[in-house]
Length: 292
Length: 292
Image (cartoon, rainbow over all chains, first blue to last red):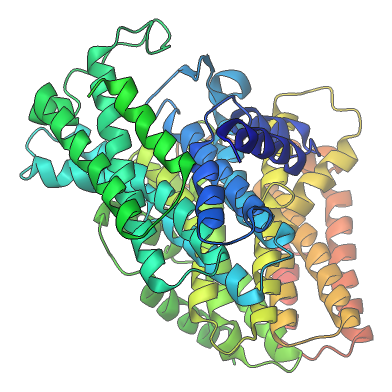
């Protein structure tokens, strides 16, 4: 399947899974952020991992969509005034700017249990054991030991100019904030394909490296692009003292680190004989966008 | 088991299940609200339902504790400035007053997946099918079709003085805000005890009636007690225009409705030959506290 076919499939299913029930404000708020136009990178990587390891794409669709819902949940809450206080997301007003803060908090809360419910409800082709394994991955990466740990350390590091080990802190927070959702996507894809431990470990490492690469690229693009090129909206100042790969290591060394992480990803693909045009394309896009 | 034995058991297990891991702020924030002293009514009702229907209390402990964690999650987010903006809860500072708004949002988020993870991790005695049924109940009552639906309608009704059917709205919001957690507690207790559909339906109806009684009693006590008697802290004004059973029906008719709901609960107990000192005690306490 090509990238655009994957995106179309995922968008159709997201629309199907979230119907506007009562109370309508809540479901509209949930659907608003989940269906914002996007690259659907995490669900694509879930489906592609499943296919690459011999599984059926169809079996992984509910899980892939659940991961996109979880991703939307993190965006809704990260954008809140008490967190990053962002007015725009992907060129559209953020959830709380449209629905108000209270509904945005509740829509995020609702997605956290709506997502695993989708896995439970629609994964008819999975055995009870596999379904439970997928749910356990979800609980782990969505929770206090996963993506939320990253967000907490991010907040704490912003308020603390005297971090002892900045390198370690930066890596920790991005492994959790960014890599964890990619790990969840690829690990569940592998589990649904009934991959052995060796393959599961390999995709876990790939996702960890890829997540860091993704974040370093983001930091580089933030530094080098003008606001217009980045598609950012006016009115939001660059955060000057934020801990990023560029602020910590400088632009050249950040590019070097990015190149290393992407090479690590390609090495894993090579060693494991992973054959995937999609993953090669995704890696290539990061090379191209950052000009490394 | 007596009420105090149940409470001790639940408190011990809650303390055991939530260890202070990294990032410590997050786990401390989660544990802070979950372990606030309380009556533990929902987990007690889960354990007692299981026992009453012939199950083993031990098998229901992880689920009972997960429901208390979910309850704590709803309190943390309901107390936020963008919701009820409460500074105190059970005589202690609310979560966001201690840990800040951002951490309070994230601690609530974390509990929403930590709770089902506890069910999944510690319910070794449950068959995969039973465990999945319990998780599905959790997803349903914790989510957009459960307790969150109630909170959304509550918020919407506060901002709307022109509700067409106030009676229906009031019942809807309390069935979801209050009864749903009792339904979750009793239904999962029954499912773990392997109860048949007839018994499951009976405890569902009991929990629905009991939740409404609980809320009506709360409205009556809010109206008739002084702030000191209610254990409330200074500085919070009574919400004058709030839709309650007393504001809508008047004190006497509210008492009458409360009495009816408690009688309905007793009728179910009688018809089903439910033999439980704990449930009789819980019902009796509401009669006594409200003086009906």
